Length: 189
Length: 189
Image (cartoon, rainbow over all chains, first blue to last red):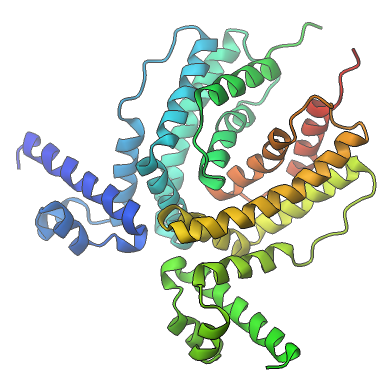
């Protein structure tokens, strides 16, 4: 298969993965179902993606990183853009349905849990590098632990969207941003 | 059926629900499967629990409220005990596997989502009344929004346990408690 043809195949298979996960969750994810949904031969799917857990995470990862915003240059703006982009992704029902299906799968399946941990540590390291830059530029108190700041940054919207199932409004983005910047700013003393 | 016999039946059915949810998630939850797992007749299950989504939430609710601690009398202690109890529940793999299965189900199934919203609004109102008492007794700044405080209270551990899948340590309970009390205390000015 040429690279261009493989890219097309991959896009179609990823699309099928997200349709199956949204409609049925991980239990619906079988090679037969993906072949039926995508029109791609079962043998092609088997050959390229022998591990369906890894395929589900790849497809999610693709969705997660597509159309990523250019983040602002100033660390305060960069944090705001990061939160706005995160809210936009969580507000996409396909994204959140896939996220929830992956979390659920990783609680029942160890092979899945490992792929999931890898994907999430990438997300955390992206947020972490934004926060470390902000710390370097004096927006975040040097004594604060970056892992804790990552949790402060991502936990509220995740809870609001995944558990209480409310959409995140632009005003909530502004409010969380203002609250975190205030909390993290080095004190005057 | 006498009340005592019904109580026994109910306990056995709830136990079967949690076993099925932990092993297979919501998709495994059928009357046939519950009958096989529990030894209770299908007709008894049908008659008492015509709605399996509601049954799953009932069983979860039972698990959620069992062995609830007596909370401390002082609002500061009461908050600490609430967090410690919440951490203890989240650290129980059965509890969290069920929680995740319910969240996942409610993203794909509207009937389920409604039952889930009802269960979660009970949890939030319990946390809310503890926080309102603390606000009345001067531990929480009167200007703070209680719904926001509930989110501050429950989101971090939920994220840590459900998404990153780490256990919550007693030290993390103490740290979150100290951080929240400090953040919520009315300022001197």
